[in-house]
Every structure is written in structure tokens, then in C-alpha cells.
Length: 372
Image 1 (tube, rainbow, N blue to C red):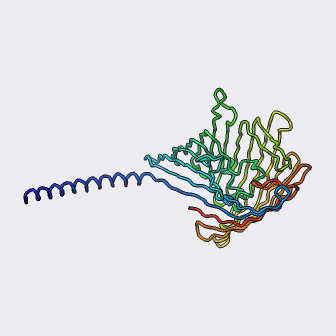
Image 2: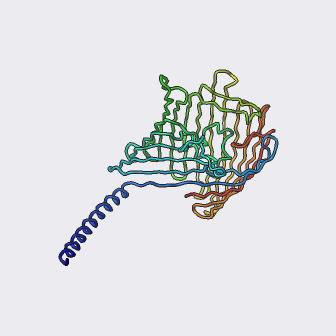
Image 3: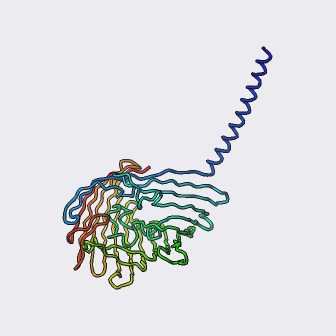
């Protein structure tokens, strides 16, 4: 009996040693994998109370979300393939905080969904999937929504695509940085059999330059078959669409840091919509400028002004924002935006709000944003 117990003890000891070696081996493999790759979960939660003075003839108070920045939940991963080459992916969904429903028409990863291969020092980056075109980046970094005021400060109807419009089935190329100069190109396939440039086909190009406090950039995008409902800004009770054949948008802008905490910016964009008839043709021009002041690294104050013209109508919009940072990830803000429309058919319509019954519309908002 004693001999059997001794053998049993030896067997257990040998088994324990083998398991220990196995655990070390697995741990080594796991640590190696994590050293070469990683996945980040991130997101933004934004909510607040908005008052609008004239929404179809009546004032309104609403709980509105995703304004200072759009609400999102994302997954971003990279893998080091060696020699400077990296593989990566981004999957990002949008959602509404007040109802919990998915954004972008209910798509699971409607904000972004792409895989990438990059070598930033040699050939740059190639991405495949659903992505933003170049009117958003770089031009979206030179405007009031990004620098201070959030989504309400976008152009009427987001006519110039700077609010962030997605392109399906897209191949996107981003160049390395050549002494401050970068450029990019994108093509979104229509995927209609026999129609390489059918409805939905999208071209986009960009170039930008950075030199210390000075940044400038330009971009172009063309979308086959795009339409834009302009009924809110002309006071029509029924939909009125421009385009249908194509939409061409382009822009140029820049920022300049007068001192590290004060940024001046200016931006010019144009959007041309063409359809089958003269009634479906229209041209928007947007002229924008402003200042963002990061005071004491706790407050960010911003003022922006935009003039939008469309087929003889003019839309003047002023944006004033004060944003206080409770921490690096949490801030509270107040803002007021006023729009005045001038023209025979012009009605004020701040983006995402119902069109007004007249030429003026004003909103006031108190909100909170948290990043993780």
C-alpha cells in the first residue's frame, strides 16, 4: 500500500510539472500575441436638452443626443506583421441615447466598417469597406462643428458633406507624410452589374499640408445619382429634391494657431447638384470662419459664422459655444445658434431641426459628453 501511494505521489508530481510547462508555453504564446497586436474598445456618449424657437411654427423643447459629437461604440484593432507592416480594422456603430436605437438607418456598424493594411513610412495605408470620404477629413477639421460647436453648426442640410457621409464598397488610399504633405484617393463601387460608374459610385480626392501652427487642405467628392431634399430650407410641405444625376462637392480651408490656445479657421466649399431638369439643378456655396479659444485648458470657447447661398437664397448662421472640461473624458457645455434666411423662398432650418415657418430660427442647448 505504501509503495502504491508513493508511485501515485510521483505520478501526480510529474503531471504537475508537465502542466506547469504547458501553462508557461501557453502564457508565452499569449504574451507574444498581445505584444504584436491589440484591440481597443472606445465610444462617445452625448446627451442634453435643446430648445428651438420655431419648428414649423411652434417652439419646442427636446432631449437630443449625439450633438457635440455623435454617439458611437467602436472596436479598433491592429496587428504588427513585421518590417513596419501592420494590419488593422475598425468597426463602429452609432446609436441614439434617448431611445437606444442604432443610427445610420439601423446598420450594425453604420458609422465605419473597414479592414486596412499599412506601412506609414513607405507606401501609406489602404482601407477596404464602409468609410467617410475626404470632404470630412481633412476639411472637417477646419470648421466650427469640430473646433467648438458640434453637429448643430453644420451647413444647412449638410450640403457639402462635411458632417460625415459614408461611402459603401470603398477602397481608400492614404499617403505617407512627405515633409508635412499628405494626400489621398478613394473610389466607392456602385456594384450594379454592367455599370462600373452606376448609382452610388463615388470618387474622392484630398491633399493637405501642415507646417507648425499652420494647416491647409483641399478635397473633392463626386457621387453618382445623389439627391438632396431641400424642402426644409424653402418652406415646402412636400419633398423637393435637387440632383439625381450627380453631386460634385469640393472645398479648401485651413487653421492657424495664433498662440497655442487660440485657433483661427476659414473654409470655403461648393456643392453642385444636377438632375434631369432645370428644377432639379442647384448650387450651394458655404463661406465659414471663426475662432476657438482653449482657456486655461479647462474651458473651450468658440464662435463661428457661416454664409450659405443656394439659387439666390442666403442663410446666415452664428454659433456661440462654451465648453467646460470636468476631466479629460467628461465635459459639459452650453451653446446658442441663430440662423437668418434671406430670399424669396428662404426659410431658416438649422440642421437636424424641422424647418421654421419664417426667416429666423434660434436654438439653445445644455449638454454633457463622456468619452471612453
